[in-house]
Length: 304
Image (cartoon, rainbow, N blue to C red; front, side):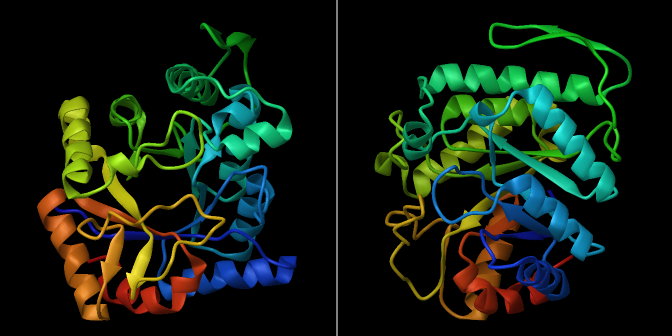
């Protein structure tokens, strides 16, 4: 696929609205395409809906999104209305990232049941059907194992039709196949342990990463060309330890695009290689600490 690069950055917190707006404008000025907000109940992270809206209001071009909304935290009818509102107020700049929810600490602290991965993926698949149905015209009815919708006609509708672009992240085969069917953007990551305690280290390495691309390609079939493939950059320039608050585990990822060591030229060349050879064009900067070092790479490659 001959596709231009797109660059996003995860931004988690700020001490004031002014600081948050300045961070959003800095990303926009540096050539980033998307500001992404995580969704966890524990840890130093802003709540995503308010943060996305404020970032959109502070900028004119920058898209806003989530990496990713935890489906288990909200009924999809609630999320559909929130997402449509953000998309309307930002004039179509929402990229809705969605996942099952997985971090055990979130569930334990909030007293939520952490169901088995298969159940959570099934529930997410239903939630996506509800979201897309409620963004459509007229009343929507749905009968699933997890959700029931009875003739609901929500307003506002999204600014972008038929709805916001959908980003799904994942590493396990079932999640990747779902993403191949439904997503506009797929963020490739490591499979998460069933108990929600972190990434499964056995899923690391180059062979596992390439196998995920193959799963997506096979499952997407004729729609593969319409999907943006990407991943999160967890190490940049010089290796540093993974932050204790982060779920990232980069220890086995040196041969993948999640670890980009070397000079600016080295990093740019690696990204070109992964795009031209393996179709990855959407890169998410995982750590704000790497923003200064990554900005020159974005400036060199953006739109190219």
